[in-house]
Amino acid sequence: MSLYFSIVMPAYNEEECIEQVVTMWTSFLKNTFPGKETKLIVINDGSKDGTKQILDRIAPSIDNLYVVHQPNGGHGNAAVNGYRKAVELNSEWVFQTDSDDQFVTEDVIKLWAKRNESNFIMGYRQVRFDAPARLVITRILKYTIFFAYGTFINDANIPFRLIKGSYLKKLLAQLPNPEPFAPNIFLAVMAKKAGEKTFDIPITHKERLTGTVSILRWKLIKVCIQSFKELLNFRLALNSKVRAIKAS
Image 1 (cartoon, one colour):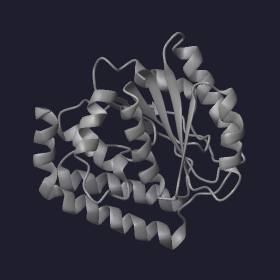
Image 2: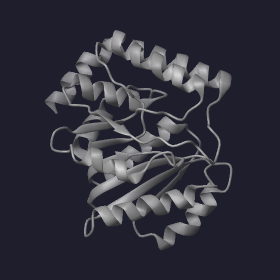
Image 3: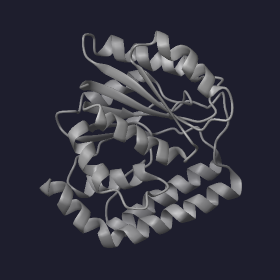
Image 4: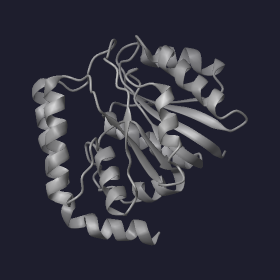
């Protein structure tokens, strides 16, 4: 199989909105790329509610939906597994977003318009509807990346990014092992340092109306400390990773 455009979407405990979100994004694919082979790749990350059952029920009637069920490994792991599946399906372009209905399909067009200028294009949540703790951590992360790597990325972990499939394959090959907690950050840093024009394109971020945030309170602080340590340790390997990306 060879795809023109695929969307990677991790999902965890989203029974209240998953059917609506899947319908929205699969319709977007059909309307935006008529006549092209496209897929919405949903990675159900061990949901404990009815997300799996809903996906299994609707999948047979939606021809551009591809569902993968996996044991719970976290959002980052689900995203990477989705990326690998998109590469395996030979996707020319790969877009990643979340399943919590906080983004709008129309904003993808803003990124798509820049596809001839960069292999790696990201949105930027100008107004972000998240808990105060998450907003503070995002700001700290932004300056941590700047001081550690000398590069400025407004929203390095945003789940709203468009990547050329062949370029994504190169990036995935250079991800640290063991896999970092927040791999999207590492993909963004490597792309930026490798010379890609990573656009911070303003996009809409809506308030979350359904489901629950998977990481809260003390656990959020713990995983952020882990991510900061991983980022700092990655400094030693970054130059060789960037050289490998450019050479491949």
